Image (tube, rainbow, N blue to C red):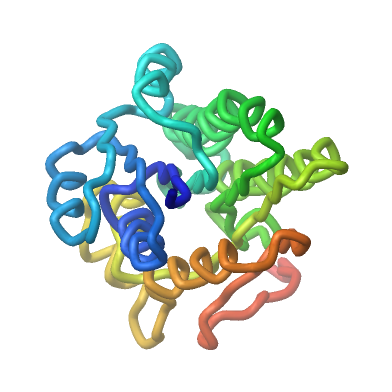
Length: 246
């Protein structure tokens, strides 16, 4: 029997690319996102028929009811997440902070907690959390988003500590600048000009770059856990500390 992978935020971008990559490896897929039409379009590109779950990962009651519809999960890809705004902390919209915390932290932890007991009982599984370099390197306007990704990093390490003695793997995947997805369009609330400016005069990574890394991770031998992978395009590097001389 083929292994089963559950991917959140699977409708577009990294989630959709990961679905295609794992489909090529023979995985059976459970695809979760809010937009059913996009999930159904994605399903047409796959070699096998996935289980489609139309669900908002921040709605815990809805999520619990949907989990009853799926089989056991071998690989959980916690991909759903977002950034909103790029204002300084004193000018940001609180609703943006709240949405990022609920999506990037609470929903990720809640879903993991629901699936983890089954993985422990079977002594098998791989949790791949989609972190970010923003969890390590602060930048102007990244305030709450960076904090949520720092949570993902620490949560991943905590899981590894708790799961010592089991065969369950945990990986925090930490990408930098990625183009060709909805990430910046969502961050700037549909302002395509602002989104496009993010990638001007540089070649960012693609969703397929990240998906190929996920595919590599799940192909590693059972005794090997990859704790974290930090990825950047060559046009990006840690900028160092800022100094105000004004």
